[in-house]
Picture 1 (cartoon, rainbow, N blue to C red):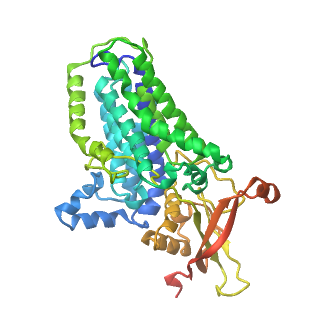
Picture 2 (tube, helix red, strand yellow):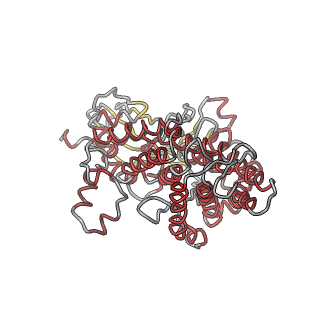
Picture 3 (cartoon, rainbow, N blue to C red):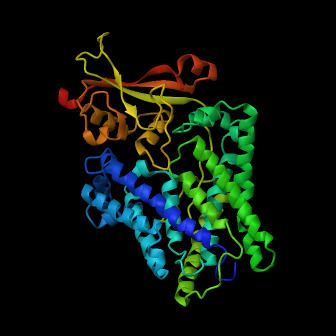
Length: 487
């Protein structure tokens, strides 16, 4: 680093700007495909109803909603698609590096547009957008806006702010685990997690079947990567005052460890874009000495980035205090703009996997012993015991993710009962979210929901049956029910 300019971090800037923008493209595509069915005008949790509730309430109610253009621009499904299309197009231009060819304020405005467009969607997302990687993407997009353009090195203060974001993300997750379930302290967490995680991937079963000693090493490696390594991300700062090139390499090695651990998570699970964006943020600490040349940074740009840094010093106090708190918050935002957030995941690990399986029948009498019940298939979540879990990340299957949470609650969520009604009605938008509709667009007469205990088959069981999962019926959750319109 050279004072105000991080001259050795030009590669880091390229990866950050293009990588974050690429994740935004995926996020807008995900919203365009799923938002209308889940949250649109006729969705399970209609966004217009939320906006009406905010408008008809007190000022405090209005502060509960993060900024969104739809508060002033009446929501319609077509306008939602317009926001997704515009945001995705600008994000794609950033991926190709076109705005970065102009002065620094051009990519700044483009990233801020993408950030505000996606925040307008997340603000209406309710439980379907209640994931930590949504606020992570928003914060990363905001900071990427101030990395500058291709003809000058990135500002030092912005690179440091990205280290601070990665630190909160990794160290916060590590502290959540240490303070959370005993399984993280007795090193048993990953003997369960590969099997019970929300959406397993193609290699999750193989990872689960590894010996116990390997899983214990995984946990130790996780604690090292999240509790120790993040501190070394800031090592290059010492190089500003002490002319020793080793500080830069320390930061790069720390980044490499973070990236390596995230690649293992990519290989063994599906966590939407959480791991991908963490990998991208890891490159913020990758420096290549001598790769950049000093260049004049415009005064106005120094003032803008300095103001952003000063604002972050103020905004970061609640997040810093949260890291030291005994009752640490996980994935919490302390301001309406989703900046300087608290992050963390899987403070406890589920030890048994229970899946809700939805079935329908065309039989007039659901109690008829001859009634044939057919199973609905989801794109990502386990169902068919012979199906290898697919790789879907960094794409986010919101319905599948929330299906994992249902057995953990004490009662069925309102959105789920509405979802069952939409299946009875054979709602085309809802059916498009599924992998398999056993009735090919026709209405079933009845629908029911059963709970099954799922576990990965052993190697011996797999050789005999070819099945990936073994499941055991635990009981009826709902039904049989029929559409209210059926009488």
